[in-house]
Every structure is written in structure tokens, then in C-alpha cells.
Image (cartoon, rainbow, N blue to C red; front, side, top):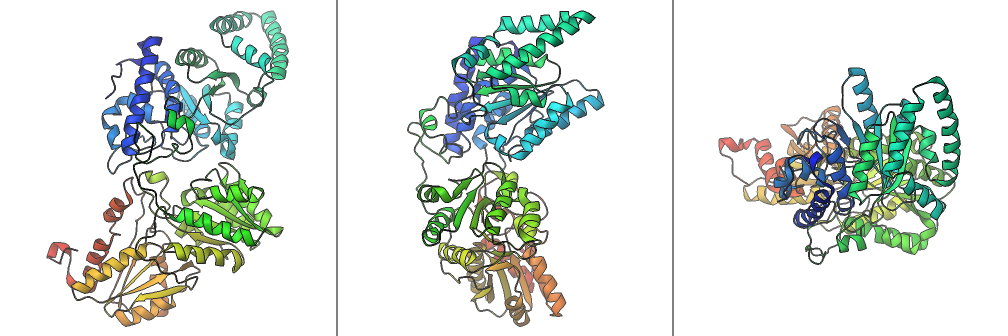
Length: 622
């Protein structure tokens, strides 16, 4: 447990430095047990402490971008005692969450949003005549996303008093000109200079001639500064630029934030930090510790046994296909390791493109590539593909271009929670005219479907697969629209992807109770070939569709409509899905049980659907 002072505004500089050291130790201790985002948090320790020394988070609005770096903020706002529940079911979120604390200004999880949110909050403050400060934290990686520039442009033009902190931990935002620029940047951030600047402006604005002199000298100073210092981009947008400054100097950061707090209009503070700062394994490999599972804090080595997963199989298969076809290119939006593309990037660097956090651009770029004869394969997390819906429609689908979307993290993803579950693509991809959506249940099937998507399809095609492993169903049905895995007479169970594993388990449990379940596996969910399901339901009279998808436009609804349209009478239809809300964080196993999508729960629901009564009425526990 941390010993957090009651009033961070009153602590001395040495006390602040000691608190930073304690926070860093506590971060490694907690994340080694819970897993989570370590590198970004280690890099933002001093910045977080400085923010809490200057601002009051229960009143002032500190808006995180993505929120990967919010752990210290949670510890400093009364939640240190609950940090061992981080990212667990019913525990603390790994991201800012207003429902968790009034100190969390906004719920986030995706990048490039903070400045837009902050502008909105600043405008609300002005219109409602409230008194609070607004601060947006923006990582240099988030500047690869177009939304960040939209927010910056509007913020600078708005004139609203607010501070944007650019946390630069690796990407070169603008190029300085060596020692002269560094020296001038250091000089203009000294306390004496800042105090003189404030006093000079106050005095010169006090009379007409002074205002004229101030304008002339300000123009001269700006011209010199733009020649020598890396700040013209932001000042052209309308910001007062401060920096670059050492992001691990808590004294200097505190002083600069106090100065920036008193300035009128938008301010951009450029802070340089080191990702993974203070923990040698994370400094040496910040990428691996960006999002990490449980590990040994003494060595940094993972405690989980390495194993294959869908992302790895996708990367290997794509490399094999690209070896034979030089038209195949791989595209990612800042997710090279996560999507399994490290090997492709090494083997085919000229055909690998990481566009940064810019999913919309990635889709439209793929459209251009496809139009000119390439076969672009865009590997993207399901929840991030949501940002490119317009481009899917307007730039790819209208022209029927052959772009392959490999939709990783489809379905429940676990501990990252509401912002990252891939539960909406089933519904929104079905609205894209001409697209085909394939759902492999095994590694072998992923390889077959990816080859078919690349070589055998025309127009847009998506292959969606979950985070993690394949389960027990390891056969492959290639790209056939559907397959009957198990014959039965009493009930039709329908699913797709790795959900098939739970259906097979449920069928075995039902068999023990005398219920014969037929299982229909859908390999393609868009366009939906309902014929095998309709034929099965004609025989069994009862249907249960289980899917890790939001209820809106789910496959179950489409199948129910097909049955009604075909005039097929049924005794009962049940749709087991994730409903109309946002599933919470927790392990995938916990969440499947919560929503009735594990084998035992499906068996229990099937028992009920078949007319054997509810659990409360005494039907057998599965």
C-alpha cells in the first residue's frame, strides 16, 4: 500500500520525488500480479504527480487519451487499496471510468479522443459559467490519428483556456536544430524568464503604446523562435507552446503546469518521457510491457506458458501466401505485434504498412491499393474497425473492391472491458453490401478461410477470429457456408467461430439427460445461407442460437426472420447472446458464464427451451 499525502498541493519537491519512486515500485508490484499496461504508466509517473500537485481532479477535468497511463491517477485518488482487483471481474477498470470515481473525467479506451473531449468540456464551462480547469493528455502515438488533429485545430481556434500535454515518448514530432534549439528551449522555461514574461505582458497591456510595443516585439520574437524551435505547428494552430521539457523532472513539470494554469487561451506543453521508465525490463522492451500478462517482477519474465493463438496462425499463413503472390500486402493500424504481423514485417518489409492509429485511412488506402491491382490484407481489432465504418461503405463496398479484413479480437476479449470487446462487427459488417464474413473455429480453418479470402473471393471479405486459442474443435470445413457437426432430433443448436466448442459440450450434457441436439455450424454469417438451419428446424421444431455478439442484427435474429419468412412452424426459439448493453471486464470464461454462453449454461437453456422447465422448477444442473 502507498502512503499518499492528504493534500498533494502542499507536498515539497523532495516529497514529490519520493512519492514518484514509491508509485513506480507499486506499479510493478500490482501489474506483475494483475497484468495490464505497464510501460505507459511507468513513463507517466512524474507527470501524474505534477498534475495532482497543481490541479484538483475532483473538480478540474483531467482527460486521458486511451487511458493506458491512468494507474497512478487511480492510486492517488483513493483507489490504491483496490489495485489488486485491477482489470478483474467486479474490480477496478484498467481505464478511466467516471462511475468508479468523480476524479475520472471521462470514459476512454481508444486513442486520439482527449483533445476533442477537452474542447467540449471547456466550452461547457464557458457557457455554464463554471470555474474549473481542463487538461488533455495526448500521447505522441495518438497524433497518428486524424481525430487528434481535428481536436487540436478546433482547440487552438477556440481560444478556450485549456492545457494539452503532449507526452512524447519516442516519436519525433518535429525536428529541432541541435544544441542552439535545446539551449533556447531550456532558457525560455526558466522561472526567471516565465516570471518576467508574465510581468512584461501585464505592464505593457496597461496602456495603448505598451500594447503596440508588445505586438511588435512579440512578432519579432515569434519569427526568431519559429526558425530555431520545434513549436511552429502548434503555435500556428493557436496554442501557446511550452517545451520540450523533461517529463521525469517532477519539480520542473510542477512549475510549468502552475505557469500554464494561469495563461489565457489554449496551451500546449510538450513533455518528453521514456516508456517503461525506472523498470529495466520495461525500458529494454517497452513494446512487450505495453500490455502484459502476469510476470515475475524480479526478472520481468512472463508467468504464463507460451502457446499458439489465432493471431500467430494468421501471421504465419499470410506469410506463406505472400511468398507465392507478390500482390499481397499487409496493413495494420499500430498493432503489428498484436495482430501477429511481426514475421511479415521482417520478411516482406516493402509490402508491410503500419499507418499508425488511423483505421479510417488504412481502409481507404487499402481501397486505393486494391483498385490498382494489389491484394491488401488489413489486420485490425474488431473494436478498432468500428472507426472505419464509413470508409468500408463509401470507399470499398461501392466499387466492390477486393480488400481482405482480418478482424482480430472478435467476441469477448476479457480484462480490457467495455471499450475493447469485439461484439458489434457481426451486426455492422452485415450492413455492408457485397461483403462476405467468414468465421473460423480452428487454426486449420483460419488458414483455409484466409487462403480462400485472398485467392478465391471478389469484393470485400472479412475473416473474424477471437483472441487466444482454438479450443477442442480442431477440424476444418474450409469455406463451405455451413456444416452439420452432429445429428439430432429434439433441438437445433446453431453457432459460429469458437462458440462451437460450447455447443459441442452442451450437446454432450444434453445427451446424458436424454435430449438429442443437432449442431449446425455456420462458416459464413454474411451473406447468411439459412438453408441448413431451416432444414434442421423442420425436423427438430426447436432452435437455440448462441453467439458472442451484441443482440442488434445478430445472426439469431436473422435466422428467426428466415424461419418466419419460410413459414416454418417452431415450438420454441431462443437467442443466447450478449444483449443490448456493454459487457463488463473480467476473464472470458467469467463473462461467458455471466451471459449464458458456456457449455453448461447453454445446456440448461436448451433443457428449458425443450419444455423441461426452468432451473427454479427443478431441471437438472448442468
